[in-house]
Length: 255
Image 1: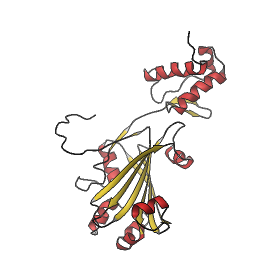
Image 2: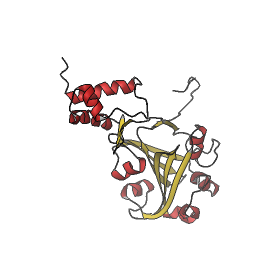
Image 3: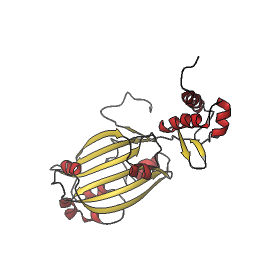
Image 4: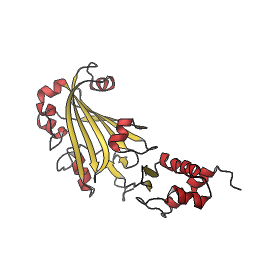
């Protein structure tokens, strides 16, 4: 005898069918009334089971359109090569990586002058509230929201590299632009964290209930001091990061 609550039985059965491919990515599930008849359960019970799958990130719901199996075409980002100028690039690192993966990049962009938030000021080694330039990108892969990227530059750096504060993108990427102006990033410190999205992050990245975000904070350094802090916020269900460290001659296939 199955002692699981009825709504969990509904969720378990549908989860198995999704995993087995009976409902592939993008497929719509039967209506609540059809599932009620199938499982001999009330619509509230069926709805509870469906909502459990929503919180797990397996399906999404739309007003008037029912429930749909979420697509999970994961993008793999090589974080050790990202922004590394020793690797050939066509444009900035994001456009190059997405294009090389056979996908289509697209981004919107804005520039603001802002006082440094506490956490950013600590990383840039400036006083809290000091002048910074924020370059903010909202990035897409194949028209699907992929990430937001917020890069803060200290005010002293903008005086030496004024294009940082100008509206519009820098086609070759800011790392290459700074290097061309004698300000080379010779190292960086990465921090990786996960959490549930804020309402604004969920809106920008079109994240359904139950899907976390991956936060990648990279602080870049010249030979003297920090020159920028970049916080990239990824959809947790559509991204995978990897690093290459050391001699990988023994690695003969992609994982």
